[in-house]
Image 1 (cartoon, one colour):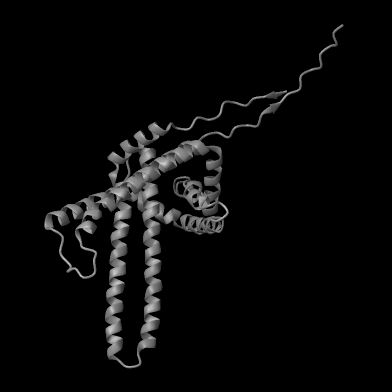
Image 2 (cartoon, rainbow, N blue to C red):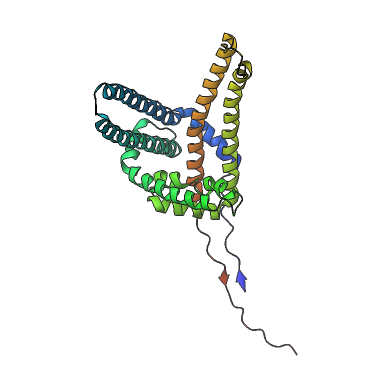
Length: 288
């Protein structure tokens, strides 16, 4: 005879998760700042490299037979810029999820949490990036057999990688394994949360595109027409709307991190269910 195990663990309800996450985000809006800071730093780094490359090209053109030296310099600077962008992106992700974890743990967070987590979790997150890239390659190989579902599901099965590596203090590959395990154990709540976050992101992206549609309509597209500046009120309205929705999309990154970390903290704390217990009933006496 098989005795059923204890009731299945009950994850946090979808509405409660988003409500609690929103309350935490309103009190800790600085969680949305790391992507903005990282984007600004990336623009500065790329802009400085572009200016330096242009000035170097002009100087090289003035000096004869110096293109080989310029090419070596450009390649070296490109590698430095690439490494700087990797560090900036690494810091942005670690800072966002570490601050989200601190918000859940203490109710408040500061940039001290971001910098403290960066020095301790950078290696694990970098390894997780490499492992996730391998999973992405596998998903790309399976695009045709799965009719594109492998690429759609990639973000779902890896949604707990960063929370596990940063909030859960897991190693890089261990975080990927835990993400797959949590998806398998709690597929429905994970899918519902993933769809909710994707709907918010899609809506904000749609609003950003909608902000520039009036400008596209107002500019003539035929080749023989003279280029005209859109009316200033329309330009100001579209530009302002674009900026507001773009900032909202950056803020969504922080809110999404709070939601993912909150769900990860809840699911990872759920106990593993023991297997059903096999019991053998004593034989019954034959009836006459």
